[in-house]
Amino acid sequence: MTPTGFKECNKVLGAPQGMTSEEVMNLPIFTDGKSCTSVWELNDEDLAEIIKTKKIALTIYSGATQPPVALGVIKSDK
Image (cartoon, rainbow, N blue to C red; front, side):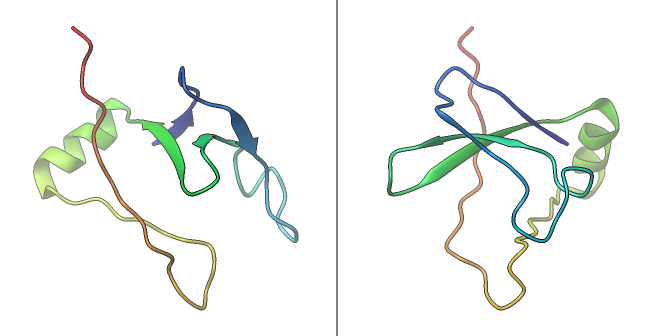
């Protein structure tokens, strides 16, 4: 999966302190000051694994806790 830009994007997050851009990609987000949303694009291999396992993993680079998160889908405009 790769983070991708999207129409509503209004900020790009860079690598956190102590990590390099080689370790962490830039993350385009939309933020309204209360929450942040990012959009991720799946390749064919990702899709095949999701179809096979029906599972995804969410990793938060925090270590001590996990903040409230939500996953969703982007619905087609078609």
